[in-house]
Length: 369
Ligand SMILES: *Cc1c(COP(=O)(O)O)cnc(C)c1O
Image (cartoon, rainbow, N blue to C red; front, side):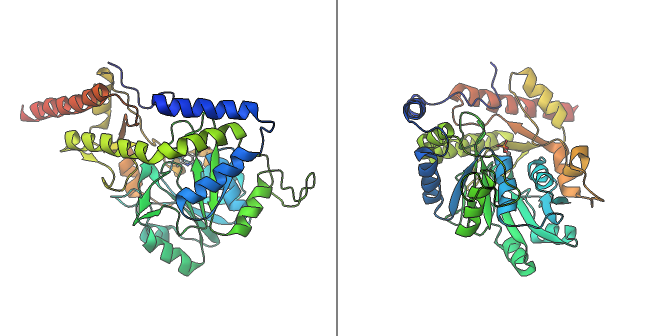
């Protein structure tokens, strides 16, 4: 049996019908760019979140770039970014003419805290990006207070955490901007590249609408610097509208699958708060990662590492004099993502569970020798 790590084309019958109907509705409409579907999705998504003005963009990286621009972060200033975030926010910083500064993360949540942010703080830091890695719905109110006291903007990257709530609020409640990617494997997914950024402030949202379309004020007149073409397509907006009602149930399913692994994984640690994560990844931590990965691969269980390289290890990001990030460094050696998506078959989940249990039995036998 081969169990894929992700399989975005698998959809329930019901959801596939909804998506097909959405695609047909776009084909039948007379406007394929910035029409009714985009407007409706933006309204519905803000309604679903319970806050903010949503601006649809072409992908999750642009969502970050447009957020930086619309929040008017001064070009040349610095942005705190978690060392383990995979490089997405750091790439977006570079695109916006900002300098990413790596910070370490908390052992348990894998997210930055006020202490790790404080340790990485330098001159001319104007913003912090909190990436809710693996779908972790951690309460960041302490970090939020810290950054408010410093006058630093907060951007929450929820590309992996659509639908995640903390204390009853969707993530991003306290942020200046919250960004999403709807890449096909994300918790809320389009049938190609798509993204959105949600602003607390309607004026910033209005600037973002200009920035995503060449910086235009009136049509054909670039008014803002930093404009680009990063519109959300009608096609993707219609698909996202059709899929939004399925998001909570699909996240519940991810949580349930991850819970099965949690039981099977003991005594290994499975990352994430069981109650609040939306389990974008189901991440196991093991000192024998490569052995475990090889064992699972041999049994047809596809695994992945999210992410193998820290920001300061990627030459393309050009980090200047990075400080040490011991927690992120150590975790990067131990992480392994198991197959975790809502459409996994019961037999596939059972096969992963069984394989984990067998690994333990083998490892225990080896230790006893
Ligand atoms: C996927 C992802 C992005 C980038 O989104 P794209 O749509 O691929 O540009 C940014 N941040 C995080 C945390 C992601 O997982």
